[in-house]
Length: 163
Ligand SMILES: [Zn+2]
Image (cartoon, rainbow, N blue to C red):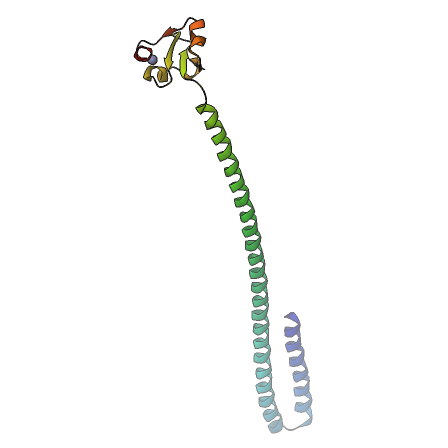
């Protein structure tokens, strides 16, 4: 772009020199006509150069824009791929967690027809509402009623009475 302005100035200087020569050699009338013509030519030349500069700027902007668009597209695609990977991994983790909790559920389902309380030294049927109230850390589970009898736990008067 700077080169173009240099060119414009250089062309202008050449014109001035030509003007000087013609002014010195020819009479005033022919110089006047020449001067008008040269001003016209110079004006056209300059406007043309300025247009070129503008066009170049525009093209440059367009190229830059395309490049940044391309980069953006690449980044989006990359992130899309990453997202797919993450989603896949997440699905795997969910599946693992689901399987684990299933296994744990099974473990919980297996045990204990009876629940004992260390605190009150009583035992209940699993579904007894009093048994369910026992603090988690005081709970003892067993399938064998003899287990509690050996420990000299007392039978719950509500749930053990029925059977
Ligand atoms: Zn009970």
